[in-house]
Length: 457
Image 1: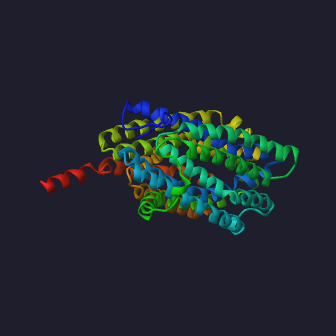
Image 2: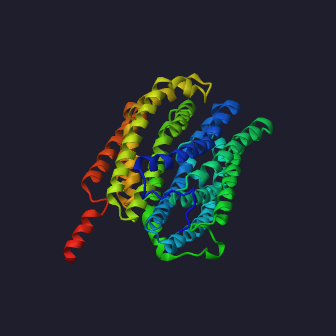
Image 3: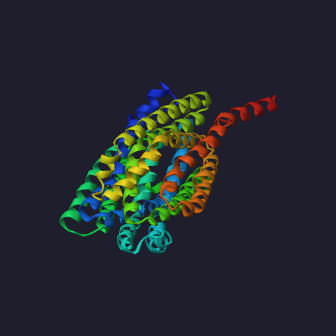
């Protein structure tokens, strides 16, 4: 196979080195990707005020409702491509790549329209205050109009990461992130175009990333090269992609719906609560970047090694990634607790909004290790093709239980503390479920293989 130096075959070599070298470019890539919305929040909050900031930050759950669904589906495509790559099955790997590309392109067009048209009724269901509605609607409609570019970047990035290339997505994101910050200041600070232009800058910047990804995929002299003539849907491969990706996509969307419910409770405490909690959510996004990177690295590592028939190596890599991510998450949580005030203060000039953001940081950050454990275990199981398990655990704890707690206890207490505490409570429950499956179930398929061999004898 004609594998280039940018690719990483994770079935050979030192386990820790493989995972770290794959995760580090992902970290910087996700760091710059996180700058997209954070730049929007920072520029909008400082140039347009708390009302505009609330309009931008309160739409995060709604945006992730669609973006998260397709990110989950893209994970499924990545798992399928990774397994074929690890097994050295080039023909099916190529079919998976071209099927994924065409399928996601069609979905991107359709859901860009659906998202833009459906934004207003959903924002109303979220109890978005009238004084914030115009800004929130302008921002989210513009964002959804460019949803096609977000979806196509996810699938292009997924193809590269599936074959171990985490460097080129990093290069493209650095360029587009810098462009996004420049466009935000230009549109808002110079042209005075308002909140919608922050989303416009994000869409344009993301489009640059997609174009760069396509140029590489179309020109690379490797087995995963994209060929326009081969763009057709192989329905057997599509079934595998949907089987591996739909649980994660469904999980992301349902969790987003639950977070919409959480956001509606935050909205009920007013504009300052929306701005303060929204500012913390941006900080939290940065804090979890190391966990996100190790999770992605473990999904690729596990899927490649199980595809290559190396379950022992898959287990060792999973242990290393989980322990490392959990330790890093708790260290970062402690740092945020210590410096919560100056960190949140960077996003808002309002003392009341600052208090809301700091309170949420001090409650949630001490329990980051549990959230990291959930994400890492879920990533391992997805890489093993067991995506239904983390989906079920997260839906039960992060959706059903989380929403139930809010519906019952927020009216009783009348304080926002319940909204903040519901996160660590449900992280703990989810981690218990996933740990049980990880330690006691046959997620590598070794026991099943041994039984089949014994039966054959």
